Image 1: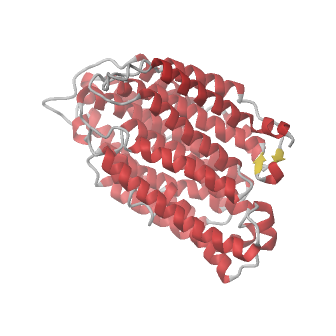
Image 2: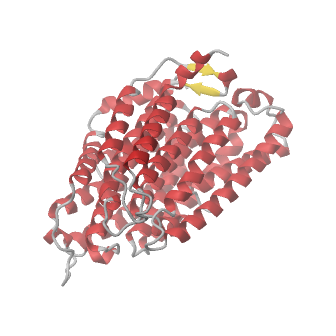
Image 3: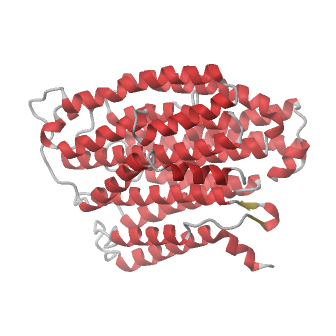
Length: 479
């Protein structure tokens, strides 16, 4: 066996080393066995340092390569996607410090880091898969640990209930996806991405395979009508986990969906473009309309993320290199803005226990800096210039428009105006609404501050530094 093939998987190997170090460190830093409620001495600093080193080592892309008979496929674009996932995970670790350090918690810190990085490893495999077996292994490596993370804070709120809902939906969606893959294998005799594309003839079974595969992935991305689990799971999960689920899981699944639609179902582009057209319209519209009605901030962000998933589909529907680059750029901008918002929500929740939109009335009077950062992040999600969200929406609209979907872009633009209204409801609450008992002034921990600095640099600079989108665009042509 040629073991040099593993060197192509340097990002996966590097992440496995990080996981191993954290497992060993947690074993030696854990409290004595008889102290059942004792807290691990594993500090946030070690996972953050290891994650930063891992990101720096693997930051530069390698030459394209196919290993293990084509089951693992690598191109430089995949390094860009993995870097986005790495930086987002680093921010999540910084955000998690205050939550994990609570005195009243029974949470095991080491388990949180290991489970989180295990899902990240699964996302790596999903994005680099050249065979449906590798893809499905990666998908399950994301889903199973993610269910544990959703139920992680089982002694507070509705975390255990949310975990049960998530694992049931994950099993259901995986079953549907596998059912579609069985049709695909039965009609083509292979599970290699490239070989399947050569053997597609548009038969009824192959059309059903496309529908079932898309339905399975739609659950992961929270597309309507496969979105019903999202708000309950987001609300019941720990806020840190909600942010991870909303950004990394959605981003990796969307990129994988694009890759498979292009490389596997490319000959059936007319069929899946029709599906995406209607799903995009319904997802954006219903996500926006239901977001307006929400009073809980985490449920609000759940429906916001559903709407954002619809915008992400605009980058997929064109089936071209422009859509690929706009999709990856959109995921990057969406991740930094959303993580900034969830960091602020998590900090305020830990300090005050408040999570309703009305609780933010008068926040500007007591915490003006957090209010400003929240406002900038909401403006970015809404697509207001000159923030990065404006440019990400512009590029993703442009890619769909160039592909001929003029009506779809027009409907998306109308929905952007609707989304501006409900994002401004939070801004109005913080700056204009009066409260007799506003959230008291407090100071955030240094880890949360570092995470917010990273996110705000992204919100402000990603739109101004055109070289970032240009670099992504150059690599998209080599897929």
